[in-house]
Amino acid sequence: SAYDRVGSAASELRQHGFSHTVKLQSGRTWTGSLKRTFDDKAGEISPELSSYLSRVDDCRDAIREEIRRLENEKTEQNGLIGWFQARWNDLSSWMDQTFN
Image (cartoon, rainbow, N blue to C red; front, side, top):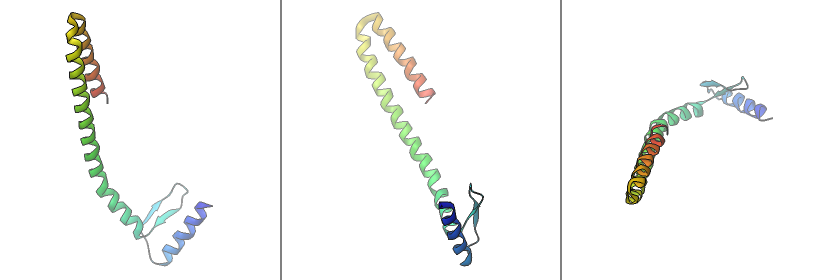
C-alpha cells in the first residue's frame, strides 16, 4: 500500500541520518531535510499568496463598483423608478462586498 511505501522511504531516510519529523494521519512520521525545505518554502509562499489574493479581491471589488456605477447611470435615466433601481443596486453591491 501507499503507507507501506512511505514507511519504507522513511526508513531509508532514517538510515541516511535524516531526523526532522512530522506525524502523518497514519500515525507514521515524515522525516528528512525535504520536510524542512518544504516547511521553509511554505512559510515563504504563505504571505505572498495572502497578498496576491488580497490584490485580486481588490481588483474584483473595483470591477464590481464600476459595473454598479454604469448600471446606475443607465437605470437613473428611467426617472423615479430608475432612481429606486439604482439605490437597490447600491444596496445589493454593498452587501456583496461586505459579505464576500
